[in-house]
Length: 226
Ligand SMILES: Nc1ncnc2c1ncn2[C@@H]1O[C@H](COP(=O)(O)OP(=O)(O)OP(=O)(O)O)[C@@H](O)[C@H]1O
Ligand SMILES: [Mg+2]
Image 1 (cartoon, rainbow, N blue to C red):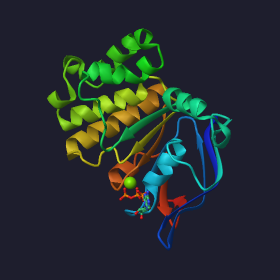
Image 2: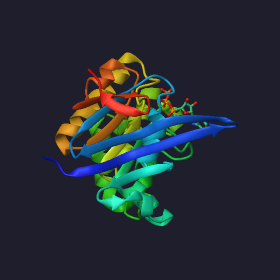
Image 3: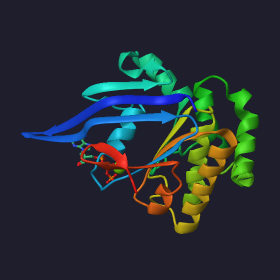
Image 4: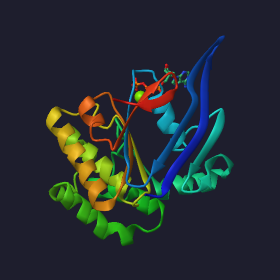
């Protein structure tokens, strides 16, 4: 049995817009073991992005517990949280936010540059580019890449620090079917080669199908998705 990467109990999150209170997470509980691919479906507005932002410590719940790699995220300082995000978490968003003035290779190395170990990671970066068949695009700026290539670069950036957990929010949302399939194959291969743990939100049943655990968000909680 894999070790526990992430553990939550009774996460609650509401937004208030004027007089209205919108209860988005309602005592949500989730435990993730290393090597799992968790996929989360759910209607638009169900709270998937809200959940990923909280799990990634980019946002805070109103109440509940969040433990990442044995650390109580609710009690960590901002400095410790940003170290945790940089070293132990990888993020892939639908809009990938590559830095436009840096090459693909530099973008992938950016988390390592921030971590002061870029030179130690260059070999891994080379390997990763090879792995996704982008070795001849390393020196391209983001504007000189196709949408699918940019997304693959963003995935490599999420992997460069070999994080314990990758959080991916609708990663195939703006890809054509072939690029979406290629990205799914990449996730599966990384999972089987490196035992990489993923949490992936999606509207696409084909994406959800790669989950070793398939969940659905309903009424602010997670259920098994049949
Ligand atoms: N900052 C905010 N202030 C107020 N309401 C918000 C805020 N952010 C999100 N919401 C509301 O919270 C609900 C959950 O939003 P969220 O983005 O988590 O949904 P989602 O499941 O990711 O949807 P989608 O599938 O469309 O991406 C939505 O109804 C949204 O309108
Ligand atoms: Mg969303």
